[in-house]
Amino acid sequence: MTDPVDLGSFLDRWTAGHRLRADVAVTVMRLAEACCRIGNLVNLGPLAGALGTETGRQSGADPQKEVDVRANDMIVAALKDAPVASLGSEELEWPLPLKPGAGLAVAVDPIDGSSNIDANMSIGTIFTVLPARANGVDASSFLQPGTAQLAAGFAVYGPYTSLVLTLGSGTHIFTLERPAGPFLLTTPEVVVPAATREYAINASNYRHWDESIRTYVDDCLRGFDGPRGKNFNMRWTASPVADIYRLLSRGGVFIYPADLRENYTMGRLRLVYEANPLAWIIEQAGGAATNGTERILALNPTALHQRTPFMAGSRTEVEYLVRLHQDPHGVGERSPLFGRRGLFRT
Image 1 (cartoon, rainbow, N blue to C red):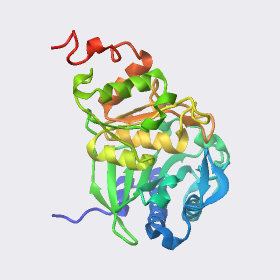
Image 2: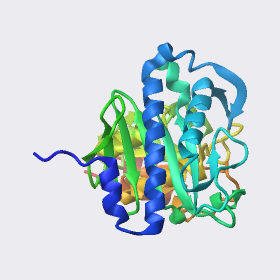
Image 3: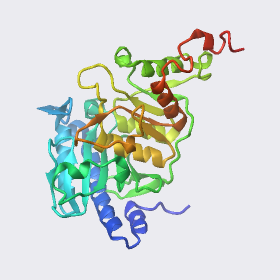
Image 4: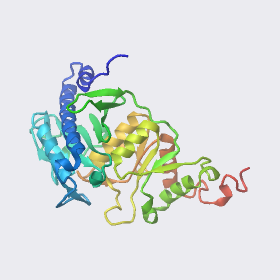
């Protein structure tokens, strides 16, 4: 058995003398180094201090935690010497100028799932690398569709630390050799199965969903005797990186829809630094991602912190969700006549 390839060697092979790729590679390495440090911090738990303490500021619609601030600081420090003109972050209201005139822009969610920090559940970091626009120090670099991404990835801080990465030619999983690295390639060319029996959604919000999402979940809950003709399992961790990592490992669909609650009517995930990188990672693994009516990567952001509904994973399930958004009653999901043992099935 050959030794696994480390992240640096993997990026060197991809770079192959291309200047832009070389800059992307340097930036990805700096982000990986930051993820290593963040992972070590998170792994200390209470020994690192009260990471779950609220700072008194909001991080979007969520209370900002101490771990959010410390992770953001680590990413800023890691990118100081990278060819990055500006940084957009969930923890910063406006883009932070780093190196005006550089060719790249980076957007991050420093800690995804920080509400889980005190429960010792998996959390992570999400990032995307984009070409910088103009001098790269205003928000315009981040107002590009997901198809403009040059690299995207996320780290998961769980029993072990993983880094999921795409450079536009497949999705690859690296595992951190603790405590200081390197990240080693452990799963090249991830493939998300086209069909699944598993979905991830916060079912406690059922009463707030629109008809299409309720119909989808009802169909899954009816299992073998329903219109889907098979039994489903439901999973939910409230940490999107953990749920996405699981579906990359074994298939599934992750659903975070818009709903009627305050601050949720436009969806929950941020398009630029959460939905776009996750969607590209999933698409590069053979899956699909939508807001219910449009491909996520085709959306044109109008603000750095713009939100969007997000449904991604196994292609068959995503396509089914799109059909339900087009016509929730179009395929008889709700009618008992179309159940597996109804009048029209034997």
